[in-house]
Length: 389
Image (cartoon, rainbow, N blue to C red; front, top):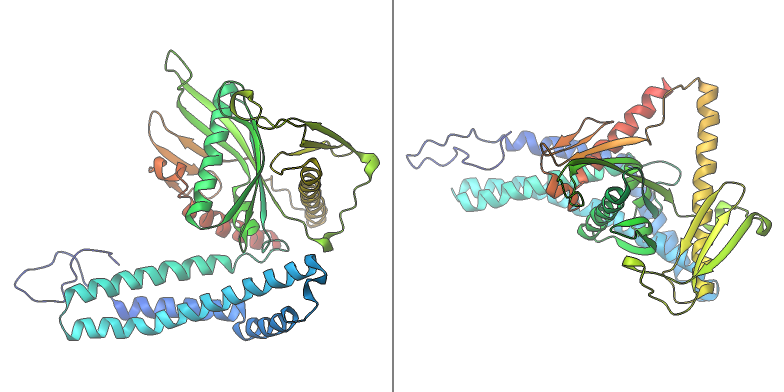
């Protein structure tokens, strides 16, 4: 299949160099893919769930319990969005043969180009939805908490950590995901020591969890007066947001709470009161901070929620490790060094797990990481299948 260029359908005396696309075959393929997606997502069950949630959302005293109400309305919104996505895609696939047939019957090359663009767009949308069907983990539907930390490399690593933060924020912006930055610790010279932000979107955790690991950067350092090549590292941690039903008990005796004044780039104060909160969970050594909210009480509550998420993820990893030990799984963790970004002496971003790579480093650093995420999700699924054999 060749996208763009002439189709060779219209005989105007010019011989088009590109072979005609096999529209019937392409439409049949995406129709079959969409059919399998509809079976996996179980559209009748989704409609049944939506009806039950609509009834629950219509209860007069629903908002007497705000947390429960928020959970019901949020789940209803997600189910309705999923149904609409499936129905709209099915309609688009059914309309495609008509669009192409009309364009060909009228020998309208402009209309055919529009139909081709719609075919390509539908194909891309179905491919993205197909990837979502692979997100069937226990917490995959949830929002995600992303923490980025500078690692080896000094000021280079701090600058790299800030560039990674920008990459993910641009990615979220492109997808209209809601982002709440909970805490950012700025480095003295440039960049950041760490940052934590929440991404709110359907399947945010399942999608972004494949980004977890160490990201390596090779470039000519803008901080080196001799313009030498430097290698720096930053770590990305992704955990699911906890819910009430998770029951992560935290003993007050196991935590230390410190308050401090929020700071911005270069160490400048951005708050005149000691409202920022840092919580240290002494048994695990996990440290979380929040300086985003207006009051110390709000920052403490948010920091405790982040701590619960990290403890939940630790518990999940411990349980998975026990299962792997029982199965004799000796595979190393994929959450270590997972992607390399080379800006000099050549341009390349390569995922070390999937071998997916691109030379368009500028686009990647500007948030165009969808192909890497899709490859990571498929790789993770295949790895899980192999480990079960």
